[in-house]
Structure formats: structure tokens, C-alpha cells
Length: 493
Image 1 (spheres, rainbow, N blue to C red):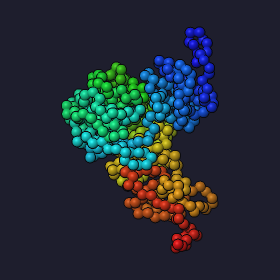
Image 2: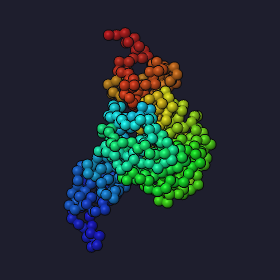
Image 3: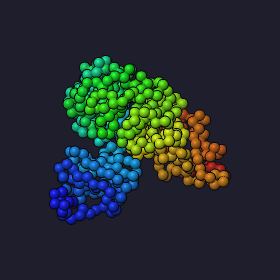
Image 4: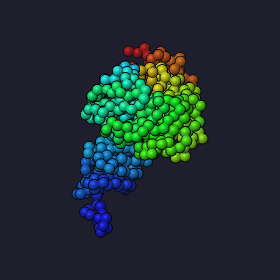
């Protein structure tokens, strides 16, 4: 540390990293210092004593290239060459928003919270009296926002389960999608739902710091709400020419993106309350979903015209590549670095796209037995979650998009296929699942195993690593499975 006035070093060097230090940040009050390093860790230091606070913050898989501290000194942010951005609680040293939990809303009016690793139900939040149609979670996990058909708009503190401020009202038709904040541990809410809103809230999104909520409505407007006061921060943002179907907020909270039944995407400047560009035109049918990369450079939109489009946010125009699906696209998501895009459509599949080239990565992810209406993607782009009309949430491993090598039908290592599969010519094994016939086929010609097609859709397949609720998932122990010339061993005791 150095004295800014004298230029002299203060105390001894802060030692603890095992490789070069690439970035440092100091809190506004000077009490905390954050550092990132080539050793893939982030460290917290006491700004007065120079001592390290706690253990190194681990999680990044490559060099930490940049760090920053929030104005209140409570949160730290780190960026890495592993193409992820992580948010840290500087009091506890824990990573925030680690993708360990999934929140789902359903037709029964309940929100459910699931463990993303085990698929187990953690909690269920009751209180809505209608269909839960929209969800948003703050980046720090402190607040969960839900939209519902019970004519209510609310905000809740996710730590205490208490209502924050008064119910949010101000739209001008009956509310189809409410805004509520739920306790992510208990699933509890507080206070009474609002009955005063007059607009159908069709979509909600929350800013990175949780300070504001954005809602879109069937009155063709976009509104911004202060989560502390529960009041709108300004007049509605202009108008689309039809229902607003989806909204998203840039990481710095300065820009809002909205999609609409009028077939357009619009960009809004939060400070001025006006559109900062012309409507982004190119879709030929309803825009159902929009998403924005964490760096605010790209917007992705999905439409009933069966395409996914990528837009340059600064230029206000579409990137030349158009990603073509073969059915209506109902939901889109983009990874933090914008390298991977996920989309869900009415043909019951999920597709993964290369954000740079626009090319599809691998084959469509099949298994759902109903429209895929919601998708989310982890910050590093390695896991995708999808929700469907079939009543399930599925988690997919995108690292296996170019083909499954080997055969695994269970997450348990002891259940893996023990007998080596040796294909002709020694080429790499590629396993495919024929969802129509139920056959598992290796390298296009070798029929390994038949499973009833209805059961195959509920299987752990390697690409689909989890089905929620967990009891819906089928796993198979292949440790004693034999094939080829060893088939007679099936008869041995």
C-alpha cells in the first residue's frame, strides 16, 4: 500500500498470492482491499493492518483479470479468463449466485426452490392465487421476483421473508403476472398481496444490485420500480405498439431491453426514461423473449418466426447472423461472456448456439414432453436449465454438446459401464438416443440397449444430468451390463 500524498509505501507488502497479482481494488472507505491473481484466486485484505482476511476465494478456473468492490464495501466482483464473473460476499467470503439453486413457478400458484446438484426440493412458497408466469432473481441472490395471475405486485426481502415497502401498483389493466420477493431458504413471503394494479404485468427483471425491478405489461408499457420504496421511479417508458412480452436489464442497470407482440425489440435509457434508439426490427412475428450479456454489448431475442437474433446494443442493429430454429422460440438466455446462447421452443427441445458464429452446437437437446417455455444458462455457459409444460425442469451439460462419448445412464460412478466398448476401426465412441424407437445407438450402427421410449425421456443421459422433480428421473446401473461377444454372461449368476 502507498500513501497517495507522499508516494511512500505504507507497511509491508501484502503477501499471500502464489502467482502474479493482476488486479486490485480498494473500498470507498479504504477498509477493504481486493486482489486477483494468476493463481486463480481472489484475496481480501484489511486496508488498515495489511493482513489477509480469511482464506483465498476460490472458484475461478483461470487467471483472475479484474476485481472491483461495491460502493458499500459489502460485495466484491471478479472477472477471469475462464469467461466468468463471480460476485463475492466480502463479509463471509462466499460466492453469491453460484448456480446451486433453481427457482420454478407453476400453474398451481406456488414457487419451488430446488437444489441444482441433487434435484431435491428445498422449499415451496405459497401465497399466490393464480398462475406464476414470470420469475427473476437478483444477482446476489437476496431477492426473488415472481409474476402471477392473482392481480398482485409485491417485493420481499429474501433473507428475512418480510415485505419491502408497499405493493407495487401503477399499471392500467388486470395484473396477469405479479412481482414478489421470497425467502430462498424458507420459501416464505410476508404481507398481503396488492389488489390495486391495473395492468397485466407480463414480464419482470431485476437489476444486478437488486435496487430496481423492471416490468412489462399488456398495456404496451415498461415500468421501473424502486425495491426499497415500492414506488415507480418515473413515468412509464414510452410504448410498444402491442403487449410487452419480455424485459431484461444490463448489468450496470443503465439500459433496459424489451420485446413485444409488435415484433420489435426496443432499448431504453433508464436515466432519461426515453428510448435511446429506434425499435430493433427484423423479426417477422411476436418477440417472446429477450436477454442481455453481462457486458451489455449484446442482446438476444427469440420469436414466433422460429429465429433467434443477436443485436449489437451500442449500434442498435442486428448482427448479420440469424439463428434459425424449426419452431416458435419461447425463451432465450445468454452466458456472461456472450459465447453461448440457449433457446427453448415449442418442438419440446433446447438448442445451444455459438454466440460468435451463430452456428448450432450439437443436436437439439431432446427429452421434454411439452413446450420448453423457459431457459437459463450458467455464467460460464456450461450448464443450461430448461422448464417445460411437461412439469419438469431439466439441467443439461453443454460440455457434451458435440456428442456423448461412452455410455452413462446414472450420475453414480459405480453405475458406469464397466465393459469397454471397442468400435470398429478404433474411432471415438459417439452415442445417440433415438427418442422415437427407444434404441441407444453407438456410432450410427451398433444397437447397445433398448429402453421404452416413454422412460427414455426421463433418463439421465449424460447431456441431461438432472430432472426435477428428482423422482421423475430414471437411472440405470450398467456396472453388470455386458454386450457383444460377452452377451452370454447375462445368464451367469
